Length: 363
Image (cartoon, rainbow, N blue to C red):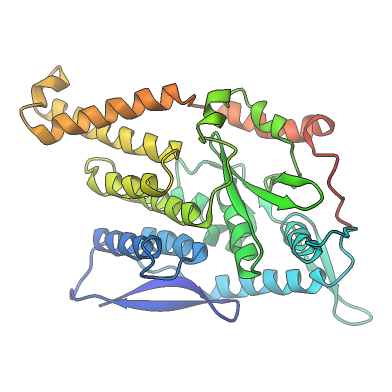
C-alpha cells in the first residue's frame, strides 16, 4: 500500500508523493510512525530539511494519509502569486542593504493581514481578503484540526499556530530568513532587519508588538526568558523538530493517552534539538503521568511506588518528576485560556502601548 504524504513541491504548488510500505495494510498508528521516521530523517540529514514538508506530514498523519490537495494547491498558489506581485511595488519605505528581504516580508504580512486589490483590466480587480483569527476553539481542545495549516488555507481562518506556520512556509519558499518564537500558549514570528534589529510580527491581529507585550501576559518570568523557554528565535532545525510535538499531540487527540510510548519518543527527539522546549517537556511529563495513573487505577493502587517493582515504571516516574521540577525552576507557569485571550486583546485595546513605533507602516 502507498501512503500519501503532502509536500510542497518545486513550482510553488502542493503535490503528493508516496512512500512505499512493505505492509499490505497500514493502520493509523503505522502512518504516525512513518511520519515520525520521515521528519526524523530530516533532522538527521538523510532527508532534506523542510519545515513545510514537516508541517503537512503531521497533518496528513492525523487524517490517516488522506489529506486533500486540490483546494490547498489553489489557495497556496494564489498567496504566492500575490506576494510575488506586490513585492515588486513600492510597498514600504526602506533603504537599507537588506531591502529585498524586508520588502518580501512586508508583502507576506500584507497578504496575510490586509485586503489586496490586483487589477485584472481597466474595469475589474481581483480582491483578496485577509486571513482572520478563528475564536472558535482557538487552542484545538475540541478539534485538533483547528490548529492546521490546511484548515487555514481552506477557510482563511487560523490561530496562533497555523498563521505563523503559514508565514514561515511562505518565507522559506521565498528564501528569506524567518524564525518562529514561543510565548505561553502562543507562537509568533521573530525577524531581523538592518534598521531595527530583532522585531516581532504578530499574525493574530496584524501588528508588530514590542517585547513588553510578551511580558504583559504575566506568565513570562525573567527565568523563563533566561532559560530559553520563551521569546527566543528558533532555528530552522528546531522548527522542524517542533513538528514532532504537533505529531505527538495529534496522536493523542486521535487515539487518547493510554499508550504514552509514541508521544514520549516524539518529545525526546524534539528535546534533543531544542532542550528548552517547554511544551515538549510538559507533554512528555503529562503523558507519563497519565499512564502511571491509569496503571494505578487498573491495579487499584493508592501510591505510585507500588509500581516500582517494574524498573521501567520507576524510571518513567523519575523522569516525570524531574521534568516538572525543571520546568518550575526554569520559570514555566501555565497560562489559563481565558487569560490568554485577554492577553491577545491587549494589542487591540492598548495598541499605542505595545505596538513597535519604529517600524514602517505598510502602504
